[in-house]
Each structure stands twice: as structure tokens, then as C-alpha cells.
Amino acid sequence: MISVKEIKASIADEMDEFEIRFKKSMKSNTPLIDKISHYIIKRKGKQMRPMFIFLTAKVCGEVNDSTYTAASLIELLHTATLVHDDVVDDANLRRGFFSINALWKNKIAVLVGDFLLSRGLLLSIDAGEFELLRIVSTAVREMSEGELLQMEKARKLNITEEVYFDIIRQKTASLIAACCQSGAHSVNAGKDANERMRLFGEKVGIAFQIKDDLFDYNTNGDQIGKPTGIDIKEKKMTLPLIYALSKASSADKRWIIRTVKRDNTDKVKVQRVIDYVYGSGGIEYAQEIMLQYRKEALEILHSFEEGEARTALEGLVNYTIERKK
Image 1 (cartoon, rainbow, N blue to C red):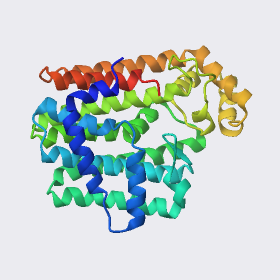
Image 2 (image 1 turned 180 degrees about the vertical axis):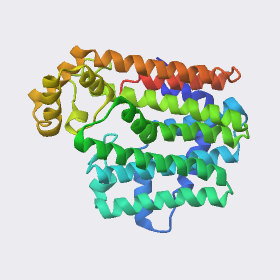
Image 3 (image 1 turned 135 degrees about the vertical axis):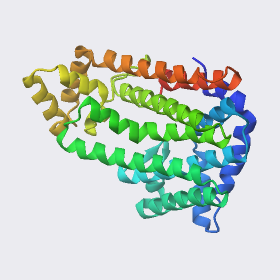
């Protein structure tokens, strides 16, 4: 499997320049914000979203100032949503580091998230990038709606496969779609190319989320112990479980729902649900759907001209569903 490092090689100069601009975009006259911003930058992740932006821009044209603005804007807004998510989830860890709310408490974390959000908005306005702001703001709205829809449905656990795809399209895929659409838009690729890249990103995002769902069942091929069952403990209805329920008898449905609703901290009962999902073919079904979305994404990508950037972007698509964590 191609590594993130190998994929980044084709956009190494762009990523280096992005790092400089992104740090600058987070600067503040308030020492506490600067201190927290430095902590956020230090614990950065794989930066897949800026990679999608630069690679889609290169597939469609030449990277320019507008592309850097798009990458900084999306990374600012994405970081803001992660900070707020940790407060909502009462999470103490993020990527193996203490979360902002764990170190500085909820009030400061919420305000820092608000600051990052405002910096992103001002960055795009100051650059006159109003269409870019519209693309990204639409994604943020959809992410919020997706999270709220998931919370609403978690109360009754009445998520159908159709609703599940609505949730992940909004919650996860919308931001990756915005990355790809804004990358194309930044190089004036035109409405057709922008829409194709948006749809490409949406399909990649859906495949990405299904892969995350599968991690809960320990399907990464590594011998790392028993499945985690975290999604079940958090009453999240993921694709393997939804499929298993669709094939279950009335009696089996009742005990599965009861376990997810009331007994989700009982390791033995949760393991029984996981075993049932495996036995029902839920894992294979989710993997099949994930591969279908990858196939559809690559078909769209192959409608663009062949080149180094397209090859790297295809590698990034494959990485999203072959990654080990």
C-alpha cells in the first residue's frame, strides 16, 4: 500500500508553503490563543484534507494563492469542528494527545473553536474568496446537520440504510467533497470539473467513513486483539450492524437493540452482538459497499487527464480504505 509520505512527495513544496501560511493564519494577539494554537499545530494529523485540495488543484490546473487560501480555510474550519466535537463528546484524547478541553476545560475549548472558525471566515473574506466561503460554509452546515441527525436517530435506534448514508454523506463526506470542489474551483477549472470533483470527494468520503465503521470490528488485518465495540457503546448504528439487523429475526432484533440501548457497557453482551454481525455477513456487505464507492470515485477521477497528480490522488483514495488506523 502506498504511504502518505509517498503521496505527499508530489506536493511537497505546496505542503511546506501551506504549513507556513496555516501557522500565520492562526496568529493572535492573545497569548493564551497562541499557546493553544502552537499545541494544535504540534499534534497535527496526516493533513489529508489539504492533500486532497492540492492534488485536485494540480489535476485541474496550477496551484496558486487561491488554492492556499482554500487549504488554510478548510484546515481552520476542520480544526474548529474537532475542538468542538471533543467538548460535545467529553473526549480527553485526540490522536493520542490530550484534547484542548482536557487541558484547558470546556469554556476555553469552545472559545478557541470559535476563534478558529472566525479566522477561517476572515481569511476567505479578506482574500475576496466568496465562492470558496460558500462551498466550505455549506459543508460545515451539512456536518452539523449530520451530527444532529445521528444524535436524534440514536435515541430510537431506528436508522435505516438510507438514513445511514444521509448521515455519513453530511457528517463526513461533505467536507472531503468541499476539499475537492474547492481545489478545482481555486484553479478556475469550470462548473463541470468543480461538480465532478465534488462528487468524487463525496464518494471518497463515504468510503472513508465505512472504513472507520469497519475498524470497530477489527477488520484491519492486524492481530491487535478483540474488536473495540466503541460504536456500539456510543449507540452508533453503523453499516455492518444495520445490515445484520435487516436480516435478523424479530427475536434477534429485540436483544440486539436492547444490548445497544441498555447493555452497551457489558463487554460480553457487546461481543455477542459483534459475533452476530460477523455471522450475518455484515462485515462482507460493508466492505463490498465501500469498494463500490471507491470504484465510482476512481471512475470520476479517470475522467480527468492522466498525470503525476492524478496518480497521487488515486493513491490517496486507495489509502483511505486500506489504512490500518
